[in-house]
Image (tube, rainbow, N blue to C red; front, top):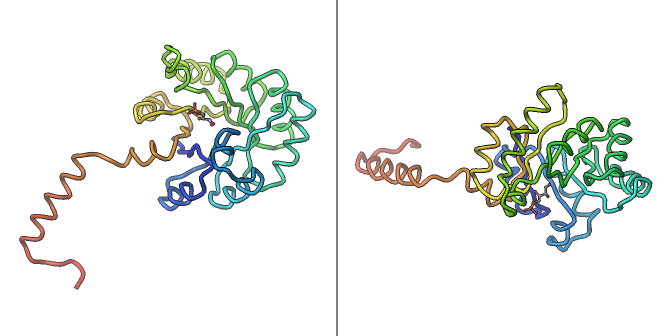
Length: 218
Ligand code: E4P
C-alpha cells in the first residue's frame, strides 16, 4: 500500500520524505488555506519534494472552467495530479484529462456507485472519505470494502486512495482490504512507527549492553 501525506505543510513533507517511505502528497483548498501560502508557489515546492503524485484541486464547479484551471495546474510539474470533485462536471473533466494522459484524483467520494462512475471516467485515483463517514455514524471502511469488490469484479485500474484517515486503525483496515493508497495526516504516519514495547525493548537492550562495557564503533 502506498503512503501519501495529506498536508500542504512543506516542513512536514520534507521530514517524511526523508524516511524514503513517502509515495505522494494530497492537498485540498482547506489545507492550502491552513498553510497560509500561495497555492501555485506551495504546490510547486511540494512537487519538488516528492517524486510521486501531488494532488492539486480545482475550485471551479463547471467543466469548462475546471479544464482551464487544470491547464494552469498541470503546467506546475510532471507529477501534478489534478483533483476534481465527484460531480457530473468533475467526471467530465476527469474523462477529458485522463484521455490526454493527465493523472486525476476524484475526491469527495461517499458511495460505491460514485466510485464506479469515477472508474468508468478513467480516474487514476478515487478518494473515498472514511473519517467523515465515521463522523456521521456510518462505518467508512465498509465503503472501501465495497469499492475493492467492485473494482476487482471489473478489473478497473483506478487506484483506491483512502482519504479522511483519522487514526492507525483506518490504515490497518485499508491494508487488510487491499486499498492501493492511504493518504494520512503527518501525525498519523508518524504514529505508525511507534510502539510502547519497541521503546521498552530498546531501553532494556541498551541497559544490558552498557553492562558489557563494549562498543561497536572503535
Ligand atoms: C483527501 O485528499 C482529503 O484532502 C482529506 O483526506 C480530507 O480529510 P478530512 O476529512 O480530515 O478533511
